[in-house]
Length: 155
Image (cartoon, rainbow, N blue to C red; front, side):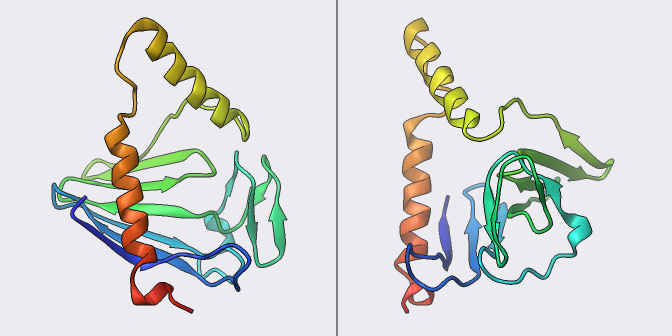
């Protein structure tokens, strides 16, 4: 990732819309707009049944229930785009051929964490590299530090 900019919520502080704009090394741009605890601008028909728990301006949404305003990440590239509804466990690929859902393996929360640990442990036991290298975690930490160190985040 080349750079990231945005604003994130801090535990026990007043909630506000969170956002992040990311520029990747290959030129793709990612946008995250997350409206936890506030009122979303998306229409309720854009929602999804979510595998993960969440919250909105009306309180907690338990796993397996309809989320009218699920958080999502939009990634825009020159050959296609992705819409990632992370807690809902849905991934959509959009290109010149249209829109298609990419099927994801998984389990409803908290089973997603179990699957991550099982996959990592299986790779270690087989002497294989981790499916998600540590560098990906470092890149994610750098992006979050970029977001939380900019003036938008300051109260």
